[in-house]
Image (cartoon, rainbow, N blue to C red):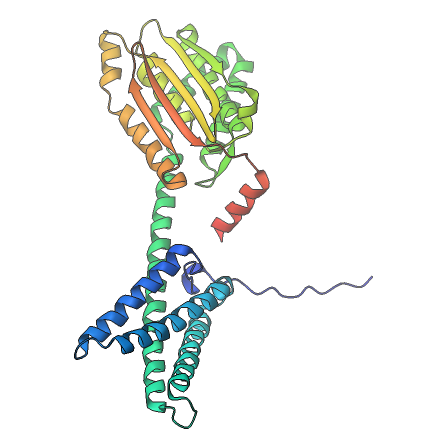
Length: 367
């Protein structure tokens, strides 16, 4: 039996050791390049003695013939350059833009003069050198810009991970006390409570920024509610309004559990008679909407303390930071008291959950 030799795979360089270029094929990028190059030409002409419209037209045409083909070439090479070492990417990109500058300058001078014999080699050399200098400055700018973006992403990822992994100490202590009481009286329920708590911790240890289905998130919430139900008993009543089609949508891991915990800690637990927690999920167009509603605290001292607690706003602000990092402007968190209840409404893009895509994205983040 012969063994097949595996070909050694070339290691992909880290992002901060490769040349990462923006998408120069995008409409906004092309418009930006054309505008900036024209402004530079205009400034150059204004620095001369008076405005020579013929020179302005010639220089504008020459610069655009350098800028647009260079952008097209770098756009085609963008992904290839990202897989190469930084020095190699720099060399290829610099050589490509400089070559375009040389060819365009030479061709432009030949068209104006009408013959190769009359070509001004010194002018072609000056234009090529100017193109090379500007190309080096732009490549350095793109590199510094990418370093800033990578640093910002790393900081935001660390912040999201810290927010996601944050399990309140009082909840942990209450759960452990509940489990300790159940072990002596109801060992089967104690075992189930330990499983629910371990499931919650397992979710908090998942990689920051990962997603799963709404069904999995609600299953985690149900486990959390079981822990609180053993502690609060009949004081906690839950009403579910979750149509089956909505369970397939993708949501961030541990996005609902802190909101549910917030509703119980500040809306139900402080009240002597407890209250009803209402959880509803539905789709409206291309949006997934999740409503969480709990009764407003009464005027008892305990309830008043729950109402004035700053933990409510801290938890909501943490969720807002996570949503802003994951979705940008594509999500919304509404929280406000209504006539007889406090409502939190979470609005997310309605995207079907695909485990394969999620695993690929997680692999890419680890790389």
